[in-house]
Each structure stands twice: as structure tokens, then as C-alpha cells.
Length: 186
Ligand code: IMP
Ligand code: MG
Image (spheres, rainbow, N blue to C red):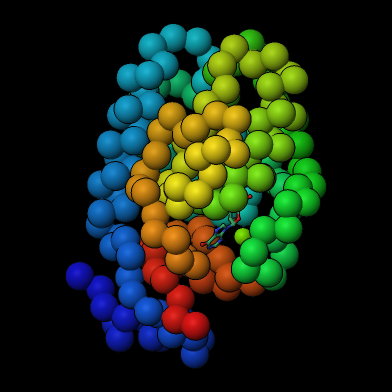
């Protein structure tokens, strides 16, 4: 079990309040999710759409645990900047070039906070006539239940309402590379 003192050399002077998800438990859960996803799509074309940048590590681990044919593409939306709170302005910076029509689309997100980013993207994607449209999120803070047009069908963990970094999640672009998820000290 990693402790905050074990990871100081990764943090560039910032302090970790606690390690919320250990590397081993993340990988075990991702493996289970991959199996769940394969079982949920017995047929049809599956396109796994990762929302960059936050989902890149999760997506990379996840697709290798989904034992069925699939395709991968990405979406880039920009909402937060260096702020710790959602601005609600969601901008599409990269739009997938892959055909979406007639495919099962699985949108992969790192963490659901206010749900604003996802809602906007769901609207955009639904307009392209996919065969189905579902969300897979690594973490959900549980704050968006009333806001979200669609709940995540696949969820890694119910996350605490703290600012989390690591395993793709950043604070002002730092800490994405951490193999665990940690809560930052103030
Ligand atoms: P929402 O639109 O408020 O749901 O924000 C979703 C996006 O904000 C996520 O994809 C993350 O990029 C970012 N975000 C939300 N909460 C956190 C956090 O605790 N740590 C790091 N990024 C976060
Ligand atoms: Mg971010």
C-alpha cells in the first residue's frame, strides 16, 4: 500500500492528503469493467470514444481488458483550464473523424463532477445517429445525478467530493502520470 510519504518524489513539492485508489485496486476494477463491457455488447460495432485528456490512461488500460472487436477514437473538449471549478463552457477542440452512425458508442470519461461536460457531449453525439450511446466513467462524485441526461452505465468507483489527481486526472496539467488516484492537500 502506497502512503503519501512514498510518492513525494512524484509531486514536485505539492502534498498528497491521502491516496484514494491504489494502483492495484484500479487495475482490478478496470479488468472487471472490461469484462462487463464485453458482456453488454454481444454484437454490433463498438466504438470506444475517449474524452481527452483525462481519460487517456484509463482508456489505454480499459480497451486492453475488453475481449471483443472494437475501435478507438477520441474527443477533445475543453472546460476547466487551470481552475478547480467547472466553468460550464464546453468547447469541442477535436471531433472524432470515425463514422459514428450505426455503431455502439461508449464514451469514456475520467471523472464526472458537475456533469456539464458530459451533457453537452451527449447532445452532440446523439445527433449523429449511433446505434446506442453509453457512458463509462472511472470516477463519479455523485453530484450530477439530477443534471445528467444519462447515467454512466459502467462506473469504476463512486468518488469522494475532493479534488483528485492521478491516473489521467490533472491539476493545471500536473499529476496525470501518477499510477494511483490521490486527494491533493490544500
Ligand atoms: P464536469 O463538467 O464538472 O462534470 O467536469 C468534468 C471534467 O472536469 C473531468 O473530465 C475532469 O477533467 C475535470 N474534473 C472534475 N473533477 C475533477 C477532479 O477532482 N480532479 C481533476 N479533474 C477534475
Ligand atoms: Mg482536467
